Image (cartoon, rainbow, N blue to C red; front, side):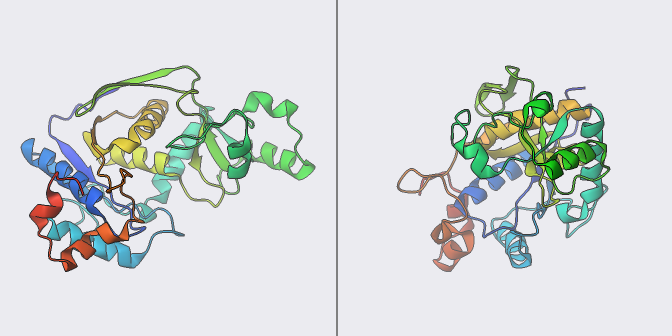
Length: 297
């Protein structure tokens, strides 16, 4: 099943409280709110606080306040509840574990011992704006050729039979040369090739935290999201997520990737652009209308 059977529109806002929301977030979230309004649909707020090392309670509080200042409202969320609660990812671990077990049972994932440095230094892993392409070092068919230390070899054997993902980076094995095609509601037809444009990707981290890709697809499906609105920098993530959705037998929503907001040097905005944080702009006297504007900074 590739599409939702629902006829009603369900969009979402999915900020992560790892820093203050900036102008780029404001534009994307406003577009998401407008699309939900245009379709006379529902807008759901999900707090993506999955990473305990980076997420902060104070950023979550600021996030709610800034969204309301922008004039954005939602019908379901951590502050309002709803039929698909909880709406904070830190409270949804069991959903992610169920998906991990399903992927493991179907042979889609495998434990990986490679460090980020190992991958970055690999001759087969060129860097791009997204992440290095994984060279396939720990793929199952190559285990016999690997020179593991004895404790690693034992750990690898145990991992395959484990009921817990703890202690390993678990990677999704992408179908090499498979072209993932979809029509973006804003950018038009997209074609991204697995194994070339991106490689095997992490769905569960060795520090026992579900990765972004897995958590997002599980939650979008569980919350019956029909359209995902986000920045164009996540196009390759969309291809990864479509593969995960197919592997899990979940419906695939529509996608709308917004143009990126860039600074005066042409660099896309990130949370490190503190001077363009919404609350800094508020303190400077900006209005919500200015923050929602499509004018470049």
